Image 1 (tube, rainbow, N blue to C red):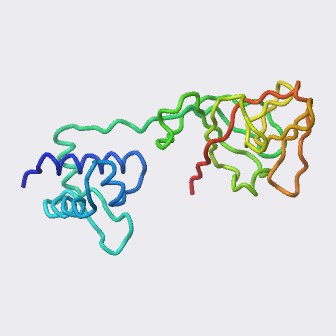
Image 2: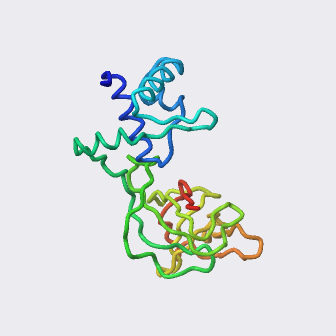
Image 3: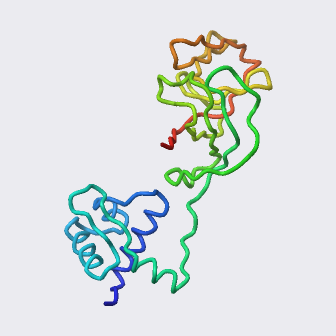
Length: 209
C-alpha cells in the first residue's frame, strides 16, 4: 500500500528524529515537529504507518515507536541516506581535579539539541572535583566560547597561561578570583585575575552509560 504525502512526511520526520537523538519521539513531539493540530491526528497517522508495515509500535511502553524492516529496505532500494547529525568540535579533556595541560587533539562530538549555536565546543571531563554538581569523569561538557561570565557560572579557566580547569567562578575583591570545586574534599583555587583567562561557560553536560 502506498503512503500518502502526509504519511511519508510523518515517517521521514520520525526517522530523522531517531537518527539524530537515538530514541523515538513522543506523540507530543511529533505533533509539534510536523505541525499537527492534535494527538488524535498523530495517532491516526501512526496507525496507518503501522498497518502498512513501516512502523513497529509497543502499546505498553513510553516512546515505543521503531522503524520496521520494510522502511529500511525501501530506503536501501532508493539509496536514501540520512545526513549525520550536526557535530560540535571536541577539543580534548578538561581537569575536574588539579589543573592539567591545556586542551588539544581536536575531534568532533554530536550535540544535536544545541546545533545552530555559534562558538560552542565540547570537552571530556577528567577528575572528580565537580561531582557534587553531577559532572563526573568521562562526561562531556558543552562550552560556549565566551569571557563574559557571572559569579557562580561553571567555567573553563586557563590558569597562569598553561593549565585549564573546570570550576565555578567567583570574584574575590577587585583583583582575585576563586575557582570553586563542587567536591567537599577539595580546596578552591584562588588566583589573581591577571593570571586567569576565562575560555568558556558550560551550557550542558552529556553522559554516556
